[in-house]
Length: 44
Length: 395
Ligand SMILES: Cc1ncc(COP(=O)(O)O)c(C=O)c1O
Image (cartoon, rainbow over all chains, first blue to last red; front, top):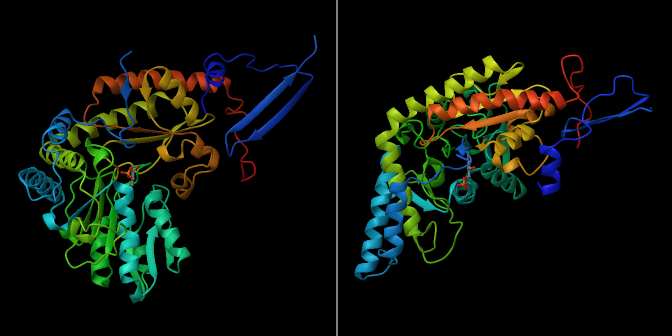
C-alpha cells in the first residue's frame, strides 16, 4: 500500500497550499474515507 | 535510530525470560507430550506446568484451561463450541457492538445458521450497562459474551456485575480478556464461565492462547482429531509456545502490581501531556475505567493515518485504532459505536504501553506529537474557519 512513490510524496509534499486569489477552486471531498482535495487554479 | 514501540495492544515484545524457556523446548525438550518415553514425559510435564501457571493467573483450576492457537481461536471455540453443544436449549446470544472481530464474526456465523444475536450498544465512553444486559436476557438466551476491556479505546467493562447477573439468570458468561490478562486483576471465581486469552498480548509468544472453561461446561470441538486437550482441541501441543505462555503468565503474576502502577503513571503522563499541549485534541474512551496501558486520542482536522506515518518516520510506532482495520478505509466499528462521526474516527490515534516502555520514551512521544499534528494541520484544508461538513455516508 505504501509504495516508495507514495511515501516520497508524503515525506516531501509539493504544490501544497492555498492560492488566495485563485480563479477557480475545485473541492473533492469525502471525509468518510479521508479523501479531501482542494484544487486551486490561477493564471499569471 | 533508537525506535520506540508504543503499540502493545497489537502485540508485545517477547520477554527474554520467555524466549530462554522456549528455546530449551525446541532444542532439547522436543518430545511429543503424548509419547510414553522420557522425551514425551518431559514435554507433557512442561505443558502441565504451563497450564498451572496460566490457571494461577486467573484463579482457575489447571484442568479448566484449554490451550489454543490464540485469542481468535479461543473466542471461536467459546462461541461456536458452546452454541453448537447447547443450542438445543434455545438460540439467543447476547454480545456487544464493540467486540473484537474474533467474537463478532463467530456471532455473525451463528446468525447465519439460525441463532439470534443481540449486539448491545455502548455509551460515549464505550461502556456497556449491566442494565442493558439484563433487559436483553430472554428465556431462550444460551450465552452472554462481553469483552473485559476493549482493544481500541481501552474501556474496561463491569464484568463482575455482568457475571453476577448472568449467574442469577442461569446463563453462562464468556468474556474476551485478551487485553486484560496480565494487566488487570482477574478472578474467574466471580462466576465467569469461559474466558479467552492470548499469549502475545502479555509478552509471551504469538500463535498460542488459552480458553478457560469452567468445569461442567460442554463444548462442541472445533478441531477434530487425535483428542488432545480433553478432546476439545486436537493437534499435537505447541510445546515451546505453551511453555512460553506459561512463563509469561508467571512473570505477569509476579510483577503485576508494580508494573500496572508504573504503566498507569506513564499513561496519565501521555494523556495529560497531549490534552494540554495539542489544541483541539480529545480523549476517546473512559477516563478512569480504562486499561492501565491505553491512551486513545482524537485530533480535529487531520487523519490518524498521517500521524502514524509521520511518527513512524521518527521511529515511534503507534496505531490508528485497531491494527486489524489499518488496511481498510472503513472507520472503526468501536469508535462509531461510541457515537463518533466517521471523520472523527479517522482522526484517532492509539498509544498502548508495555513492560519495556519508559517515562523517557513517553516524553519523546510528547515532544513529537505536537510537532506532527502541527505539520499535518498546516497542510489540511480544514481548520476552525472551515470545519468538516460531514458528507455522504459511503466511501
Ligand atoms: C480483544 C481481542 N480479542 C481477540 C484478539 C485476537 O487474538 P489473537 O491475535 O491471539 O488471535 C485480539 C487481538 O488483536 C484482541 O485484542
